[in-house]
Length: 260
DNA sequence: ATGACGAGCGTGGCTCGA
Image (cartoon, rainbow, N blue to C red; front, side, top):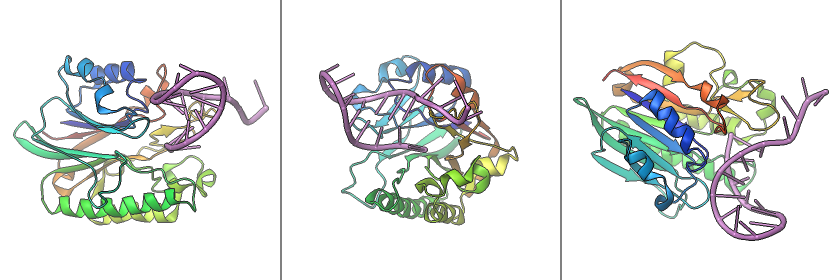
């Protein structure tokens, strides 16, 4: 089965690209981030008439996440536990039965955290602590579990073309990277690192300063796998050609192939 | 030359992102 994550930077602005990519790739489950749409304005009908099941957790103006799937989910949950007062729509997860296998897929849009020294950075770190606690809970269920999305964390120096440009950025702070490592230390596997030794596995290129033609990218979209999912891992793909399309998102899809 | 950003909201220019 193919499970994919993609920050599309606006589902209404990206509908043509989304449909083209779904046609080409035929994933089983797709997590979308930054849909920038309320649930009522999500282009549900255009997807449903092509056979996709759609689950959204939207928000006006920015943020927002969604799950698309060929099979209907068995159950869906919205919001990351641990902060009932948090109104930002950044987390949705669902359990699917694909073939004769059950899998839980979580789609997250982790806070950016810039600028440093503000409540935005502490919100990022608080959110990551909540994510760690939730991952701990899910790992205890011993179901194949895919925890994927836009993490807004550059894990290591080889995940960025120009590390020196990011030393004062929330995405590359020691605290952000340590929190990401804590997730891995729970027993999650970074699918791209496990399945590929390719260099420059970037997933984001800024719209500004010619970042794409210069390949000045960063790897911040990640797929983490529980042990029960990691043993199914067959391969990964970063669909970087999508960054060259008309009106692209600044992120590209990351796809994992799990033996179904 | 070393670069000119983009989406949403809502109509002018802000917020937000990475």
